[in-house]
Amino acid sequence: MDTVNDVDVLGQYYHKGRMMVRFKQSFNGRRTILKSNYVWLKNNPSFADIPRGYVIHHLDHDKTNDDPTNLVLMAKSHHTAYHWKQQYEQVKVPFLADSALSEHIFMPIKKPTIHFDKKGDCYCLYFREHTVDGSIRKYVSIHKGQKLKTKAQAEKASQEIWDQANEIRS
Image (cartoon, rainbow, N blue to C red; front, side, top):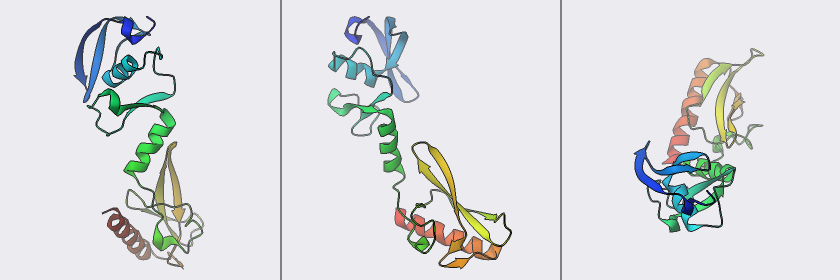
């Protein structure tokens, strides 16, 4: 088959919250595709299929709204980055301004975990910085210009950071 317009549709069904389209015969090696992909291909006949490395994005973020005016072709990496930014707005943690890592640490999405430094002289708070490629662990051993010498200091700093991060989020 050259385009999706040349394929006979058997029907539609829901699968994991998304509408799927089932074909009578194979279309580019598949018998079913997402309805959003089908609608986009139907309305863009110059494309035989969704190009490798691209996805169809819903402008209104409603995966069930497959109106042609709501669908755009987007590079998969840009699509992932866009949704990560929407979900986890990267806000620099203001109370780490005196830290050497202040330019690299962003608001945690989970409470910072506490670990004893490998050198054995202080406690560290671990953050997860979410990126398009995955999750990178970063840590800080200084909070408000002070080393975290005791576990109690580290627990207090972790709770302070988490409380302020939640305050910024709301």
